[in-house]
Image (cartoon, rainbow, N blue to C red):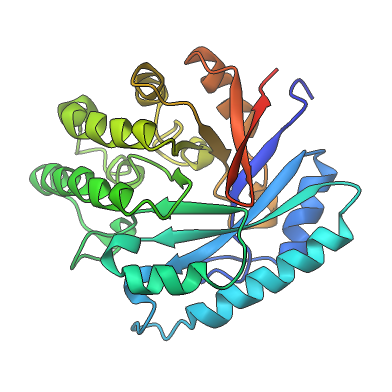
Length: 274
């Protein structure tokens, strides 16, 4: 492999409601690919933590993820760095839940995500029209500032997440630069608080066809003083572990970054791309 420290910092095991495979299988795949590290970041949708229509027991799922990750770390000690992480969805919508979950263990890495706006379903389930797409994106970038303002995470995941689904409708064309003011506000908040921006490579496997965010936004983050960037496949099955990570590294190089970041005990660790 061209890159020495290939790391996948965003993965989901079957402890996530939409995950498919065990932590051990995810780590086995990472080791077989020669990855330097993997971080298991199973879901906690904070706005649904104390009750949801699908009867998901997030506490039980998170505790299972922590336990399984500890076992995998012991198993792969000499082959692969295995980090304990979590993806906090919508923490600003229920900070009590976020604080409770963060007390469960000493995490290595915490992802902050926005999958659904207040009083809305996940963007995955919404139906879009050109007008509605613009309205939702406007709200999305506004609520992202609330998320960043919580300060309870290490990296902001898949910026432009709604475009993953809006792009699937060929009748809707959105120029994301229309929201540049809102994007810049989010990026400045991240940079000024020394938090990371994630390069999520799952878009390379989907209709959107590019990382989330794309090169223009990643380059803008650097221009605004952003120092830390993480890379994650957002794998929900063993076969996607590591998918697109090398492509993500190439994007970072094009945007002027020489290092990417992994987190150990919530502390950023800069690793050279080349």
